[in-house]
Length: 129
Image (cartoon, rainbow, N blue to C red; front, side, top):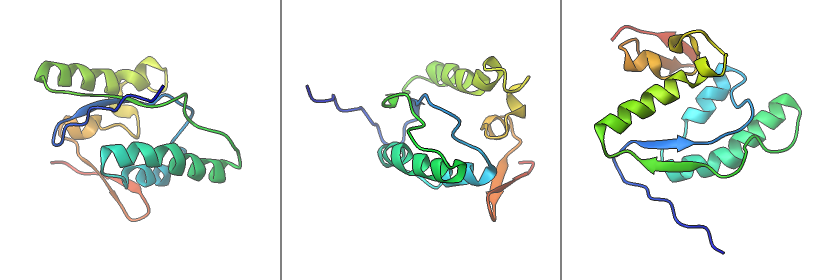
């Protein structure tokens, strides 16, 4: 049975879920991930490119992911806020940090006015907006 097509709406946020192993080992890994722009291409490349990248760095093999990614367009502001809370609090729920802003690869800082820029070799630098 063929897979059903995903709904992708241009210029709309999407809630994307991709469960897997440790994906970011360093700031450079995160920058490598951010180099992708288009949602469909991003997820396709992540499945292969990020896996190959991390496997090469960690001298391992196999996939990072637990199946295909799931995505749903966000068309209601209340759902956008709920998704943002869910995403930003995931590292807290997983016990990786005690507060959302402490997770190094979070977008939380940008959302609360402490923008984080990546420059050079992917080293983060915090700037006030």
